[in-house]
Length: 169
Image 1 (cartoon, rainbow, N blue to C red):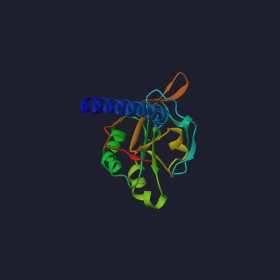
Image 2: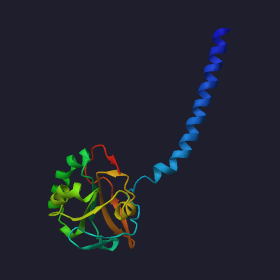
Image 3: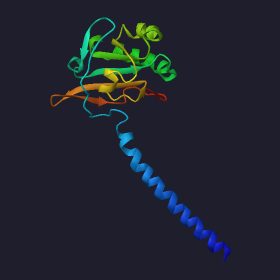
Image 4: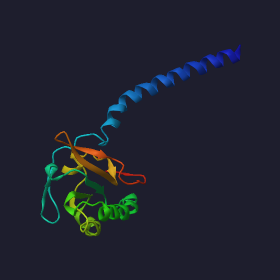
């Protein structure tokens, strides 16, 4: 009799836990869907000036452009940086069709900016800045390939490089 009561109690608790997990899944699903841009998503509007004084915006992006997001204190960014530079040097596009966004304080970003400048238009912005918001960036490093589809600027690939664990923006 005692075993039957314990099994019934266990069954009731399990059903309760499953119900709560389903409720939590419904609550966090919209948040997870908004956490980052994916292949096929349209890029939002943005207007910024590069560290070289060049105006940049969504209209600047051409077919097969690459947009990357890095942070100076991000260890995974340091691991991906050589791969991004190699990609930039061999992808066939000119420097003008690549944007590297450095997220963080300008003084802390100086070294990273100098490494990226030869291969991309570089923008330095605070977390949740104009470009980060347009791309709904949720972490660094993020490297995206962008193209034009039916007159819209969209992400054509969100897996341009093999990425280590990303740091939250």
